Image (cartoon, rainbow over the protein chains, first blue to last red):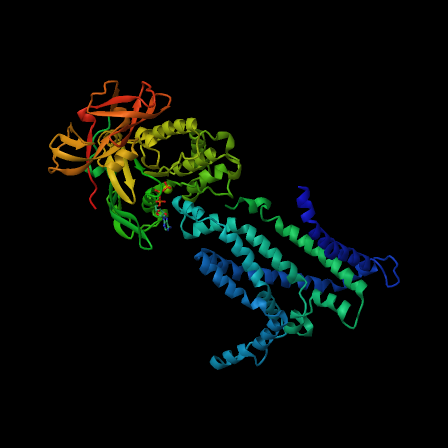
Amino acid sequence: MNKLKVLSLPYMMWVCLFTVVPLIIVLFFALTTENGELTIMNVSGVGRYFSVIIKSILIAGVVTLASLLVAYPFSYILSQMEFKTGNFILFISLLPMWVNFLLRAYAWVTILEKNGLLNRVLGFFFSWKLDIINTKMAVAIGMVYNYLPFMVLALFSTMRKINIGMIEAAQDLGASGFGVFRKVILPLSMPGVISGVNMVFVPAVSTFIISRMLGGGSNMLIGDLIDMQFLGNIYNPHVGAAISLVLMILILLCMSLMNQFGSEDMEGKLI
Amino acid sequence: MRLKPLKSDVIIKLSEICVGFDDEKILNNINLDIYNKSFATLLGPSGCGKTTTLRIIGGFEKPTSGHLYFEGVNITNLPPYKRNVNTVFQKYALFPHLNVYENIAFGLKIKKFSKKEISLKVGEMLELVNLVPFDKRSIDRLSGGQQQRVAIARALVNSPKVLLLDEPLGALDLKLRKDMQAELKRIQQSLEITFIYVTHDQEEALTMSDIVIVMNQGEIQQIGTPLDIYNEPENAFVADFIGESNIIDGTMKEDFLVNFLGNNFVCVDGGFSPDEPVDVVIRPEDVKVLDDTTMKLTGIVKSIIFKGVHYEMVVDSCGYSWLIHSTVPQEPGKMIGLEIAPNDIHIMRKKEG
Ligand SMILES: Nc1ncnc2c1ncn2[C@@H]1O[C@H](COP(=O)(O)OP(=O)(O)OP(=O)(O)O)[C@@H](O)[C@H]1O
Ligand SMILES: [Mg+2]
């Protein structure tokens, strides 16, 4: 036991140094003025950005849902494949993650822009074009593309653990294809759904840059706002810290709400 | 007494079933009739294809060739959920996200029974398998034996015409195992369901079944009543697998006369060609140990162990190590005489090939 504690020391130090200390710094900045006096003005001032926050949460929600809808059938098919084949296709589909995310976002700009790839292909067949670039839609597409791998990984690893025996038992008891899905696969894959939603929603809420590149100036998200407080010309780390703090609390609230839906101890029950 | 079943009484028929997994033959030309309301047991060593045979009947495995009939109808290609057959799986395969009650109710819910009917039937089943106080328990907080009983209840509650049981008592201790054997037999008789039971425990097979199907390496070795199987094993494998046996190489001199270990013995089997090599099978309890050392067969006691009801001796005689059961202990190293009655000498044709 003691040995184990010693072994976990580096990790504990890491957590302290790079999680707890920064959190305290954020808290400190959020609650002080430039002169170091205590204030709640920064935090209460976040109310100004209410609409941006709501928009960020909504887009993140839509992006999470879309990722889930795309990733679920894909992961399921993968999980039913032979072990090696499944792993290989997973590896292939995750390859784009190795490309820098700025490059990936630029790629989407060239696809979606007015005379981009998409419209050129469409123009070849039809007389109309899609005006997607610089809309919320474009931002959402870029985000789904960016966060999809997390969803796939979470779902795939859970679905792999669903024993074929469960499926056969359900069939034995009279469940047809859809019955098996609804009564066995869906409930047993819930832990994966929950962790996938967590893994996509949290980073999605605080997305930045992608929104500026694909959404134009009019679709700023809360992440961009925070970014601007630190790196933009506005430079106000106190306000930035306050927005971050509020955002963190909101995400925590969202997550705990979401986790209420799945039963908590499912993870251990998978055979 | 069980009446001799009529031909029309065949509920499950396997006809020339073969199964192969990448070039490897798992089942080879299985022909098997299971009679309605009978207790049939597939018996054989690990890996001989018992589970595979059950999976064919349950619909989880497609035969490479051959046909499966249910009440005379070819169901070889019918999906499992359309078959009037339920399975108690070797690994239970209980649903981890459902509690005991919900597991048992699973099949009934799918068949759209009313809540009232479901609770009635599940209640009966819980009583039958002695799990009434556990109905709200989650599966992972049950012992292996309790899980096994949930698996039995979950299948039985659907009142299938045929119940497939894949080593359903494997995880139980001896006493509970005996109790459940009696219980299953009682259930099978009172509900009048056909049971196809898998086990590698020969005692379990012999005590519970109407018909025993002995399998080895994907082939049926013998089909018969427990008595047939025990007393008239058709080949050396069956003889050896059903209880321990002495199996000795011999040659048939003429009808009712066999030569082994350098001596001629009178026996009760005939119909072999002269000098045909055969397997001579003699049960350990059929060898009488005598102090008389002028017998045809004499030997030296190598070892002796007390087995509860009898002593188990190894006796060296003419270069063969005999396994002998006797109620009278003998000193190791002692010279003894062996006597075998003619009708205890079983002659088996050597397996060709
Ligand atoms: N999916 C499969 N792929 C390849 N070989 C398989 C497969 N399933 C079973 N086998 C092989 O088929 C043979 C028979 O297996 P089966 O499960 O029917 O044996 P069993 O008689 O039930 O054994 P046990 O008493 O150990 O349960 C074994 O040699 C096994 O390795
Ligand atoms: Mg088996």
